[in-house]
Length: 445
Image (cartoon, rainbow, N blue to C red; front, side, top):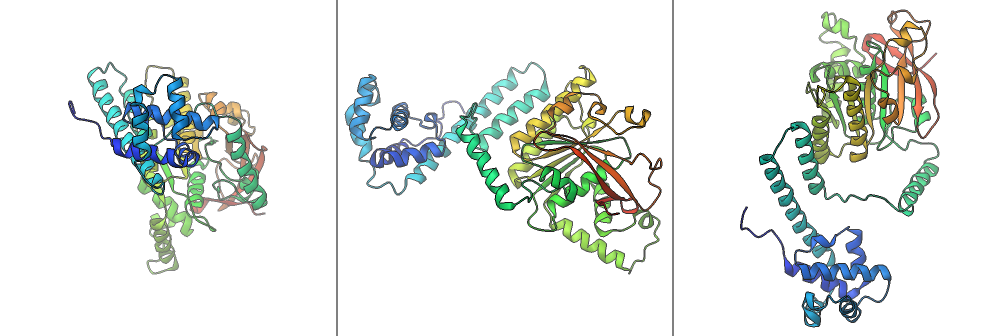
């Protein structure tokens, strides 16, 4: 609003600076750990003092009022902050540093409110000067607001010390767990042994020809992630661009309850039999799970990312599934199809990194493997080489070479090929497909 003063508290800023001057390094370290920027201080004088304190902390001299005053005097900034008198005033603002964390949180809170006002005002101004490209415009506005509300700090280049520390934490967990999963379980023993689970920030592509069971396998993985046999599940979001939420729920219920869907549709199941109690049990388990389905049609990659951000903000997602890549609507229908798919692929990889979770993306294969009667390979990914480039893991589902045109028996084997894995081995494994209940399980002879 024009003429209104942005939310701020000079007193809270002075109390925090007082804490920094009282115990020096400890309070400054807590500010830096909280990633409190100089811009969080509304008062220019307080901002300058805080930045100088942080600068002194980095140099490691004693941080006290005398050193601060001398440094400000040397840089000819002492008068601009109100002189030694103002430094003395703020240093005596508070007798103890016990409430330092409260003032850190208060200064940051008011800063975020000001940033939100700035972003929202900028969005309004941009609306008046809008010149086309609505989808990109909305995505940019939503990203800006999301970054503010999530209190994110964008770190560009990190010194090797930080990623090395993170990598050692992962290595320690691996050693402690002695081969156990470090990511989200797929629900399939052999696949988890190859990948150690789907890892955070990874984009996993599951590709196959139509009617091969991509959706069934993805739903089995969603169930395993959100409702594992051991331990706690992760919140899982399924974007279904092909089937309705009700259709997916029916398939998942029948698969978990091990009910023949064909017999169910034909009304050949007993109303009072064991099947009904199993369905009720499965329905109760799904109702209590953290499994979310979005069956919006005609989603663009930007709309999908916006929806994922909103759900993640409310439920802290651990796994996202997109069924399937080629059904995402283009942001600009005028560009070639290959560029449209490449944009969607890049957007999904960016989503995995942004939300720090694995994203499983279903994709179509072209007809080459069928025509040549061979095992699918990476070059068969349909319409764009960028899918192969963006993916961290590529899984390909195929029928065994000696199988019939369609699954003709109640249980049959299927081949799952790990064609690419950035951080692990590739290979082939078998799964058992139970056709009557559209469920994949660990392979058994």
